[in-house]
Length: 252
Ligand code: MF3
Ligand code: CO
Image 1 (tube, rainbow, N blue to C red):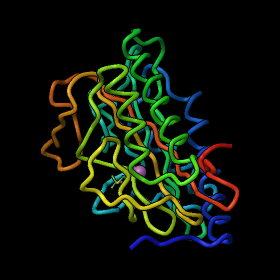
Image 2 (spheres, rainbow, N blue to C red; image 1 turned 120 degrees about the horizontal axis):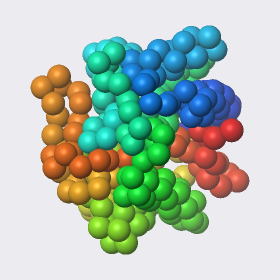
Image 3 (tube, rainbow, N blue to C red; image 1 turned 90 degrees about the horizontal axis):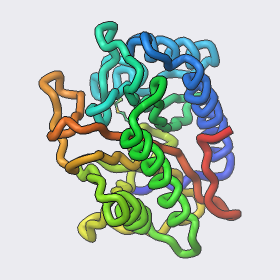
Image 4 (tube, rainbow, N blue to C red; image 1 turned 90 degrees about the vertical axis):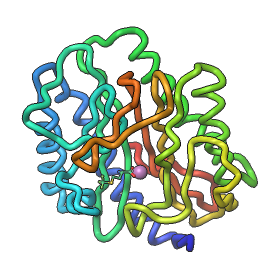
């Protein structure tokens, strides 16, 4: 069941989203060669706690950290580790959910560590563009959920030949980390296709692979990697449909 949010609830979700946006923006200055994915998780955890919020991923379905930190061929759900130290040329996505006064926000950015290769940079730029075209599709009058995936898929695969991950999707958010509806990044008419009505709050999150769309889960039960070992990028915003149109919440 889709839970539409009232205005005062969107106000609460918006506050949670702004705090999350600030956290991810601050990481920009911290993510440099030599930092470990554990250090990134600690920075997120400490920031969230200092602002009296809760890292919603910690303990969610048994997940062992506050942030999902996914370098290079890791698509999503990378478990932070002191042993994973980033170097010049790496890319790394940081996916974070926070709960503030009971309201959940969800956002992801992919960071470039020092100078990265042209093809990694292009993958990152195009993945961010996929998020932007997904948001634009959702903003159109009368838009439905599957319009998002149609726009993302066209940009990623039709225009650039990138692999679009099929095993994971965007989702409703606000009261919980994952709510209905699912928001796929591809076209599949077997998914429900509700109209994007005022009160709908959801996360749009293209996961785009440089090579094939296929992924595997490592034996830790979490880490999702590309099957061909090529890099992947991930960008995500929480958005809300209001009477005044679609609002991107996880921006400052
Ligand atoms: N933030 C993730 C998402 O975008 C959810 C992570 S689930 C966790 O849907 F358990 F790994 F934390
Ligand atoms: Co999400």
